Image (cartoon, rainbow, N blue to C red; front, top):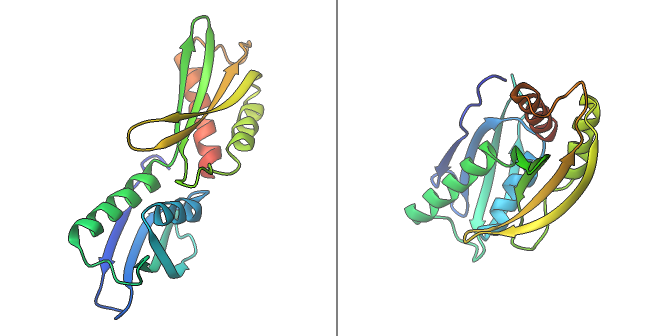
Length: 189
């Protein structure tokens, strides 16, 4: 997909007397259900029923009947707006992937938000190493660290890459190809 469509989230309180309906349309990607449930859990929203449609032309429609943890609908417009913006942001950019210079070395960084419970996204390490192996890029060392900001905690995967003839890491084309392949593998595209 050359352009990513921004996800749409529509809130409807008229369909059910006890639940708020969230209608979501977004690009189909690996970990989509995980991202939605993580945001719901972190926002103290209870999903009581959900329907994920089949992927059509790379897009997926999702209907979720949700309640606040006290069992009430989400009526407050500010709460609705906050929930919608969180869902849109996390579905549009669930992971961050960049290559940086660390002195003479080249490092691939992959960051993803951590749940409030402290758990990180599954299979990140596996998917990154799979993508690098497919490109023929060797890893000198790898580590996972936690990084905290004011808003949230991040799980950061750091891969120190080895220079090779097929992928001279000083060239921007090679770096772009690595970032693109890793991102596409992580997202399932």
